[in-house]
Image (cartoon, rainbow, N blue to C red; front, side):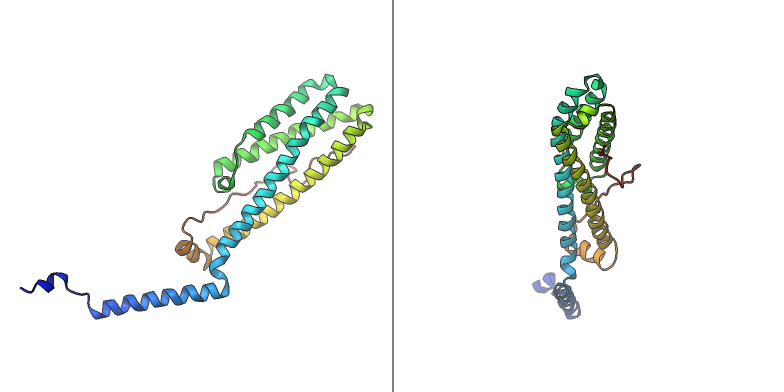
Length: 211
């Protein structure tokens, strides 16, 4: 028996097939890279993550305005203590939810974030509705400044959410359709669909903060 038979080389046809396959894979990757298709998945992913950061920034901006708003209202409407307490509690709950880039790929964490922000929006809306009964508060300069800042922030939240929804739609579509699905599975196996905001009553409009 020949010792070399134990380590017999694969048939030439098999070797040739592997070489051809490798060359075709390289050619495919080169073509995709040349037309930009191979970079589309990570590009859309980064755009969605950037939009998510803006959503977080605007919600944080709103949270930062609330303590001063509560203190100002408290000075004129102490009898609204229950409403004020609910706003403070809702803010505490919303800011306690830990979010990062991974949140957008975790349905449970994303829902927790959205629910807490919706609860804060509701509590804040009820607080602002009580202001109508306090003319002196409505004319207070500090309140007027906070009102203006809050109105602008709510508008920016709406825009940031819309931008994020659009960016996620583009990314999710790319990794779920051909050739993006093929590219993602081959080059970016860790790419996951991202969560987006679900419709809630009046979610398309910011809370009314005008008086």
